[in-house]
Length: 281
Image (tube, rainbow, N blue to C red; front, side, top):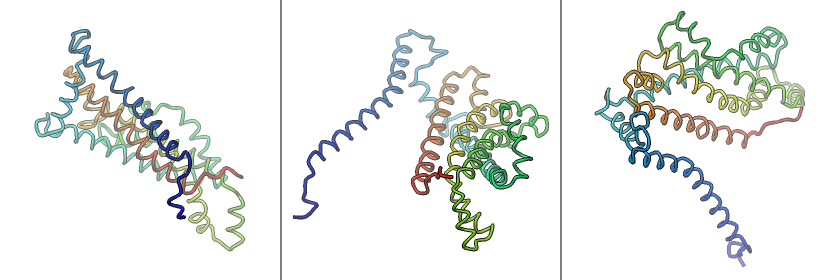
């Protein structure tokens, strides 16, 4: 008899339970979001709440739809705000990954770098990211470079610390084996250190992205000359456009979730699944 024809007892029930559990979890997640929106809509329609301060969700979504097209003010406003914020975020994160990886490797691998940079980083890390904004505004001005540097400062410390932790947790036997086989320092760095710290780098990117996204929105309210989700909310507050403000908050929440948990979260899971994280020392 073919193995394909064998019916494993209880396999159908187990699959059904898994599907049912997944459906229940999905229903709870959507319900936790949809039910408050429905109650908000009903309360607005019945006049139970101030519709100027709390416009109905249907009106908020309609405003987002209008502002996303050629009838927006300016035309295609939402895509332009989102694109500008993402450009600043990705630019700052790329800079944080490059600088953070270099410093993290140097601190983790050399005594002189640890002696020089570790105390400095420990002193600067507790400083809130937005505390640097007035200094950057005076030095650089209202410019994309200011927002990009704030994103960089918000993310770089997480990258550095996770890289250092990754190096410290690597199995020293890997270095011994590579050295015994005649590997040079450059070969050890490329073939041993980089694959070993990569899962930690992804974790640092995920942590840093959450901090950087929140810092970006805040600094866009202060240092963005035009466009960006933070700028959109601040500009709408000047005209008391509550539907635009709530729409901006909704976009920030959705994009932040997608970036941190879906994009980088999936990358982190795939990286750890492939390479793993070595804790043996």
